[in-house]
Figure (cartoon, one colour):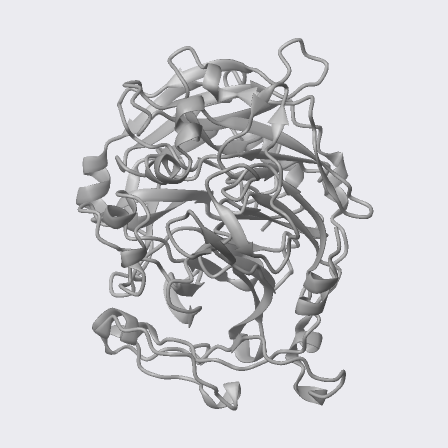
Length: 549
């Protein structure tokens, strides 16, 4: 593939400073101020926040850097902050010492499939020498119906690589719809996990006034943090629920009471910089009925990136990434000293790099833009990429994006973190396949619509959604279900035929992605009927669980 256009896009020297949204303005007025230029970050220290409290000097306006017309090299001179703030980190030596993944735990749901069965945790054999390679070898059904298991996370994960494997014995499964939390024992029998504990929704509702739980990470102190998308009624409400690291009981809310963001979804933190960064999601009760273009410009889709003081649990900065941008996935670089990371916006198709700048403040800049495609036969005249997942390899060399609607997975080289370079791309489904109901009228990237994917005689429906990368970076696993009501709307054949789990071979030297045609986990052949598969976890370690302290 010719990547000249993409390289030209990311080579532009484009640095316009934008306005950070004060938290008090978010919470009180719930209005979304436009991006404005500011001249000097250092002049914006201090200020009064929510509840009349004075913010520390770290509270400032951020900067959102957007593209503008291409300018000659060197035209910006000393103002080129991208070149100043771009880091090149050494590769972690620990990465190659972790053994290859032999099993995976995959969350599966039957919600919206017309199969009246509970969600379950599937154990998949990933050992190429095993006679059960690529098969589901165990299923742990949940005791309730329609939980919508979406994410999963470990009860321990903020530590060094040489000790994390011994502590990874409990898997936390929050229900996106039910707000129920399951704790699964994977330490006693890793190939046949058992349900260890169930936390009922009423505990979460009464102690936290939260619901619609999503991403799970363990904290440096051993407690477990779970982000939420809404309140018990399905209205938008961000924040975090804390579980005790030993008893796994609900302790309460993590954030200060008067600093609850408008919405929430994903988060990541960096202990050495005392920072946690979270994204905005969708309004649960609106998202549950499917995607409606009439919801655009009505505040249904999130637009903010939130910066938190990790130790004080206070919201210090908030970046407005644009109306209906929908920032979902966020990751720091894995190097524990790295003061930068990336956030992907599903509807705008933009990936922003956030980084630490002067006076302990943070800034963001646009580094990748995936253009929408002009189409007919679809719900809107322009189809966004809808980037669901963003992953970074453990050695911080590559960044991966899954575009659920366009159907491709992209690999970017991070030799210069401020200018990711597209080096690999492969289509594994999507809505623009040749012979489908959608016709592409104008495409800034492709000359023709991609062909459908068939692996081991199985036609792959749906689009790439959740990904997991092996620790050595050589194998990328992907499932193709995003959210049951949206699956049913955009990919009815996916609901009918069931999800698949694919493996992509990764060229870690030159870059490049290739579908492994000898690997396919077919969730359409489940004993209780086709199901939808989501998040993948490896007990031996992966690229989206461990946060090094």
